Amino acid sequence: DSDSGSGSTGGGGGDEQIVMGFAQVGAESGWRTANTKSIQEAAEEAGIELKFSDAQQKQENQIKAIRSYIQQKVDVIAFSPVVETGWDTVLKEAQDAGIPVILTDRAVDSEDTSLYVTFLGSDFVEEGKKAGEWVVEEFGSEPTNIVELQGTTGSAPAIDRKEGFEEVLAGQSNFTVIASQTGDFTRDGGKKVMEAFLQQNPDIDLVYAHNDDMGLGAIEAIEAAGKVPGQDIKIVTVDAVKDGMQALADGKINFIVECSPLLGPQLMEITKTVLAGDSVEPRIVTEETTFTQEQAKEALPSRQY
Ligand code: AHR
Image 1 (cartoon, helix red, strand yellow):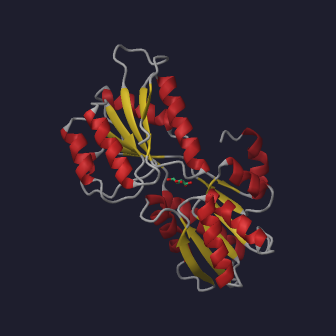
Image 2 (cartoon, protein in one colour):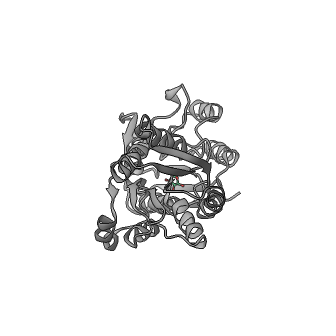
Image 3 (spheres, protein in one colour):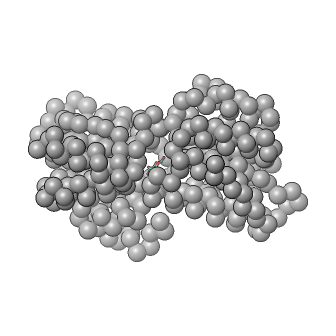
């Protein structure tokens, strides 16, 4: 597997260098790449030695990585769980070994919340609601056929973004989700699913993609079908990574709900607090905004990722 240590000595001060094991989901999207970079750079900056593994979107690989971090007796384990369920056993093993676990980006659905110290990341239900609110504003009482490109099945962002979106549209009979399927948060997945949607449904008004990459894949499929993305078929996505923001500024996407991948600095801060024996909030929510096409044009030049 792809475990790799990257030692670092700079920056942090103190006598004993902290060792963190980080089990990443994979490299499925632009968001994930930016998230990995943020964690690696922040660790270096904070003088924390980072052992990093990429699970290629497979839970079994993440569990293996966590077990190997327990064996190596790291000081702290941080990870972004690919799916919500099935973590209790391995988290109990970390707890028994006295190693604190910090969840970043995605949650687990364990009833025993003592299995992790805190969860740092976005409110995905809120993101879904923001997407839904834009749709209501944009389409009003017009009959609207929606197709949904879901994220990885069983993952917190796929479950919550669907839920938040549906909650806002519930009770408004002009909105119909005519098809909904997973594109696994990848560009290729979004493209393939959108191709099938276009073949099956001649009248699609809107694509709701759970991330930018799937929205970008959908753009390719829409153009290949001879339609104009952003006009013939409107698109709303979540993330606001550079490629997504560029497509928004170019008029191919209509609205983006931001999900910030820059969790590294806060994760390192939390780690130091926890290891110093101080308490942290059990839930730390990331601050984020939304972007229209005009706002994307303004924000693009200074966008970090
Ligand atoms: O968990 C965050 C989600 O995972 C991002 O929205 C998506 O792009 C990524 O793959």
